[in-house]
Each structure stands twice: as C-alpha cells, then as structure tokens.
Length: 168
Ligand SMILES: [Cu+2]
Image (spheres, rainbow, N blue to C red):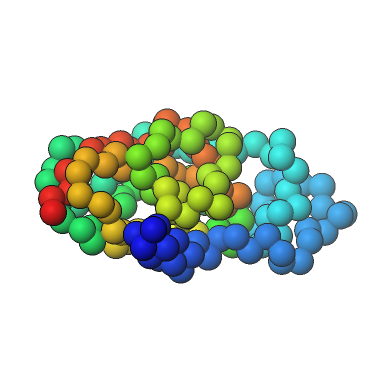
C-alpha cells in the first residue's frame, strides 16, 4: 500500500485543477464562446468541446513504445497544434491540459477524466509538460490524454499510448 499512498500524494500535488469551488459564472452571460471565466463548474454539460486543429496531436517527448525504463520515471509531454494552458484558463479553442493514465484505456470523448483515482489518473491542470512518476517493476501502459479546461477528454484523437518496461 505504500506505493499507492506515495502515488496519491504526488498526484495530489499535480492536480491543481479541481478548483470547482470558485465563484459561479454570471447568470446573464449568454455567449458560450469568448468566456475565459475561471468558474468552470457552472458551464453546462452540453457546452461543446473547444475546436481542435485537424493536425493537432500529443506525444511522449522522451519515451518510445517498448522502452525499458527505471522508476521514478521522468515523462515529458509534447503537443503539436495545441496550447497547453492551466485548467483555470477556461475553455479556449485549441487549448487544454495533459493527463497521464496508467494501465487503463483512453477516456472517451467529452467524458471527464476522473479526479478521484489519483493512482491511475494524473491531471496536469497547472499546464505542466513534464512529470516524475513512480511505477512498479514490469510492463505498464502509459496513455497521454489531452482534455479541455473542464477536464473533458478529447478522446483517442488526442491520445498517445506506449508500453514501458520498468526494470527493477
Ligand atoms: Cu484535468
């Protein structure tokens, strides 16, 4: 259980994007675009995902599929055609933040990346582009998942998936 506790502590320090208790959005606001409010919790669920350029992608900068690594592992997260913003920056076209999923599948489009399971879901809501994670020895699947300011996944379109082999 020590591993889980450690991972939870690390993840908690990385989250910084669960600030759903900020001031509510103005009720007189009728425009869904151009609304960089930090009050993301008040945006209706049917708000469309921000537009993403056709050539946009996310990728692991320093890791290749099948690579043998050691733990703790430094993970550098790259984007092309996207802007990495903090979650508090609000919904903007071509913008969002990274998530790292450990040994699970990518998150379906528009579904929120869970914030409760910090062992397998890392949020980088402060616009981080690198992280150090601890992994147990053996093979692990790492999924880079881009999501909007509301932590809603862009789906497999903005995903990169690799397997790493963590040696003892
Ligand atoms: Cu997030």
